[in-house]
Amino acid sequence: MSIYYVTGGRQRPNAKGHIEWFSYGKASIFSFDDRNGSIAECATYSTPIEIRPEDPKANIVFKAGSIAKGNLVVCTQTEILTYSLPDFRQIGYASHPWLNDVHHVKVNGDGNFLVANTGLDLVLELTPAGKLVKEWSTLVDENPWDRFDREKDYRRVVTTKPHHSHPNYVFEHGDDLWVSRFVQRDAFCLTNPSKRINIGLEKIHDGVVVGDQVTFTTVDGHVAVADLLSCKVLRVYDLNKITGNDKTLGWCRGLHILDEDRVLVGFSRLRPSKFRENVRWVKFKAGMRKDAGKLPTRVVCFNLEKQTIEGEFNLEKEGCNAVFSILKSE
Image 1: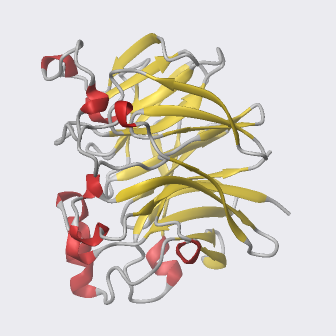
Image 2 (image 1 turned 90 degrees about the vertical axis):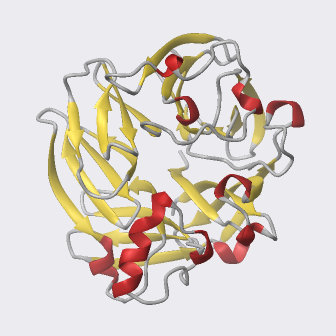
C-alpha cells in the first residue's frame, strides 16, 4: 500500500468566466491511497494579502513540489512552504520579491531551494529563509533583466505574460542542473548550455529523473523518455491511444514513475470556454475528437509497456480542480 500526494487547488465557483490567472481561490494538497482508492484533503492554504498580487481575484494555488527528508516542499505563485509528513504541520516558509508564477520547487544537496520562477524566466536558488544564492536565466540569447526590474516586487504583479521560455520544472543529474521549458518544448541544461533535449512534441511539463533517464509529459497527453547522457529522446507514448476513446484527456501535467513499465499521470479538466494560445491544440483535437473538457481532474495509472490503464483516481469529486505534481509518501 502507498499513499500519494497531489498538489493543486480548488477553483473559484465562478472560475468558468475568468481568465487563467483568476481561476483558483484556495491552494490544496490531496492524498490518495492506491489500495482502496480513498481520497482526502490534507492541507489548504491561502497566501497572505501582502505577498500576492494587488488584485484580490489573483490565483491562490499550489504548483509542483517535492519530498525531501520526510518533508513536503511546495510552492504557491509567490511562496515556498514546507510541511512535515504525514501530519501536514507547516514547518517552513520562504518568499522573495522576485517570485512570480512559481511552478516548481525542489531541495538540492545543500538544503537550499531550486525554484522554477516562471514569471521572470529564471531559475533561482534560495536558502530556506528566502535569501538569494544564485540565479540562472532560462534563455540563451536574452537576459530577462532587460525586461524586468531587479528592484521591483513581482509578488504584487498578477502576470508578466507573455513568457519567453516559461520554465516549469527543475531537475538534477550528476553535477548538472536542468529545467523544462514550456515554450521551447525542451529540457535545457543551465550549468552546461551546450546540453539540450529537444522533445519536439506539444508543450512539456515535468522532468522526473531515474538513473540516466528523464521523463516528461506533454499537455496533449504524451509521455516522452529521454537519455541524459546522449540528450536524445528514446521513447514516446501516446496516452490518447492507450485510453482508447474519443474524448480529449485534459491538461496533462504531473508525473510519478512507479517502475520500468508503469507511471502515474495527472490530468486537469479542460474548460472549453477558456481556450487560449497555450491550448490551441485542443481546438485541433476537438475537431477530430468529441467531448473536449468532459473528463474530470484525475490521476491515471498507465502501464506503458502493455499499453493499458491499471487504475484511475477521480480527484474532482473531492474538490481538487488542478493537478501540478504527484508525490509518493516516504
